[in-house]
Length: 254
Image (cartoon, rainbow, N blue to C red; front, side, top):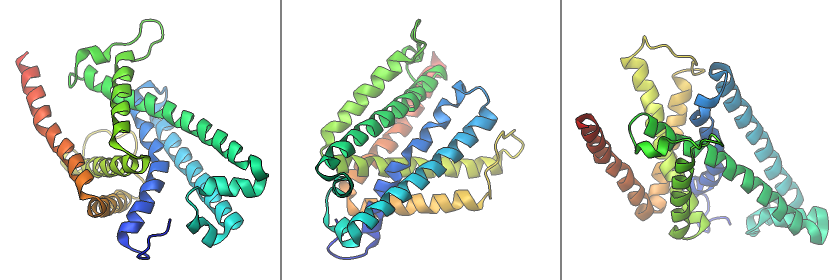
């Protein structure tokens, strides 16, 4: 729905949160880089092709919504995909769009499980998490403890409320992590210039600075829109600092 107050930066941030959610899968590709045969070639290629593909599909689908329903129709509906499918397929449109959503959701969950579980697995192997989580299934070769942990954490998010609230919370947290990651790239370029870098960022430093500005702006607007959830997310990030310090200290002592 269009915000009653017209165009605002907060409204832009809410709209972009849904767009950023659509593109979130790109972040999963580097997490499985350790299982890619030709990392130097395939990871950048996968990132570029996936981002380009999602962009083309996203723009094409939204353009079709506007073509079928018009600007007013898109603004007036709460389920634009079903309404557009109904125009094309008639009464069966809702069934087909529901089937498409189920297939899309299943593929998205599959990618998130593969990427997210590898984060816990890698942390455990580096001594930054419980060693048990680094165990691999003897027959399937999967990090089954890490997958189980990710499932428990994911299920807990469903108790937060509506899908829109979970999405805004997740996108806010992701924006903070992206900003920290990009800043780390810039800092390491300055403090460790001689380290071998298999992949060079195109248009550096313009491209990372541009992305950094976008994610910081989005996080700021989402904070203004819902400071309670944003503060909870910031609290979790802040809590990670003493937990990491304590873990490293006890690990060295062991």
